[in-house]
Image (tube, rainbow, N blue to C red):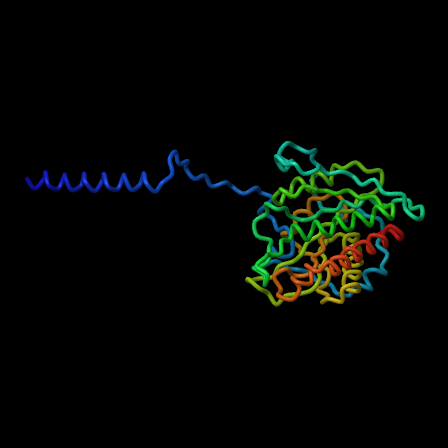
Length: 309
């Protein structure tokens, strides 16, 4: 008799549990699949992702670097094993209605200019990149880095067209994630009759929700003499134009940024202020400040178009 009562109780609660499970769980629920991250996404992308145990070399004496005259690039001036693969299907960002990358056709400049370099302009991150936004601002909005980066690149392109300087918009799409491998492959495999330079535009983030960190910094591939010269000129133009804290030009001996270590050309990455600094985030949203950041980059580009690296 007791066995029958116990069996009845077990059956009763089992049926109740199954009914509740059917009620709260969606029908035809698929098992959760944990996607393995792409290998390139495990490598640091920008200044916000530098680990604490990485040795960073910082140089703020920009004038001395700029007036130096590095010899022509050698094997050691570029990454030891830059990615030179031909584009593969997985290098495309997926279905998107955004335009595909195109090289710029300069407008007729006011003065004749013979292009010296092809500037591969990289707008760092995409709309689908996780994070890369500020905490909520006073007006209940957010600062999104991918939007800022594209504003700056778009403004640079507008000015380069006027000047007759050759450019290549590496990632005009918006609906992409980090797309690191695709960025590198597009730049590396872009045909050009003149030397190429890779310029990646970013805004920085410090540790924590809000940070006291502020200012400007520019990164280059560790050991690249031309990269160092490029970084120094861009950093100086940004500091002189904005008057913000000079955090120096930087490189790291290990765990170098993907777009700096895999490109087969001189490459730098500018970090234009901190979007999780309570003061600088509002400056970065200001159109007049954005124009100054654009102009600083254009002035640096013009310097190298005139003088070379």
